[in-house]
Image (cartoon, rainbow over all chains, first blue to last red; front, side, top):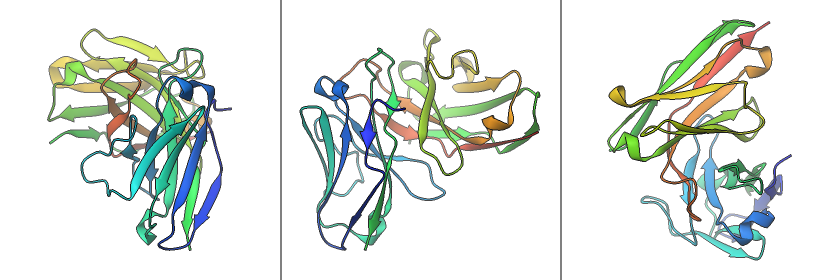
Length: 108
Length: 122
């Protein structure tokens, strides 16, 4: 089982705001990074660090952390945002990478 | 332009060996970690391990230690993932990805390869 816990599925109405969460004690020390994966495609980094977007990622994507929970917020979700979303960070055993189980986002 | 280009799909039998590759271009290969990630059919992402090509410092997930070997050849800016004896349960898509640091609080995989599909029949 992953040390980063994500809800398996979340839905949002088109144009509304949705928050996808990632919970783990390590997030009190390290930031989560967030990846978007569409069917048949490789993952794409959408948020890293405190709240940084790589070039080309729309500004409707933002990140935040409160305690042991990191959040990816999509403000004004679009149809093309329907995808699986994964968080990653370190784990508590000092392994450099661990992924959350992923969240399937459905845009209604 | 940063690119990670992976080798093509493989179909193997249980017990066979396999080495897949990830060729990097567009950046200083030696100064970024290259990680490998497994995605079994219909499942999530799993971290296998990561290598620093400058000195070949390699870390493995406890779940995959001894199951796979990760290496890198700086002269051709390529990282490899290999198995000595495949199992049907190794059937998955395998991705390589670049990471600047493994200790920074904001570390992330910022570029990914296109994936290599490995199919192992029993």
